[in-house]
Image (tube, rainbow, N blue to C red; front, side, top):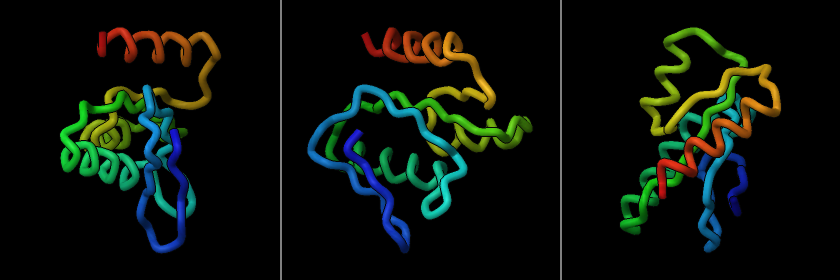
Length: 98
């Protein structure tokens, strides 16, 4: 996806558009909630269509999953997950864009 974390916050997207993002919601420097919000802000500023963002998290409490969706993720995938579950989520999200 051309993104990277840096200290002090701020999610940087390169000039390459991502077809889909698997977002870990519990990253150490910039959490997935804020990274997702920043992606959505950038998309809005550039009039880009929303990139599918699949939230991955070990937190499976309903409020954590709801917070991921509220931040702008399109779906959630609680950890641990099987490869087949990841592939299904990816196919579903890509299918929604077509």
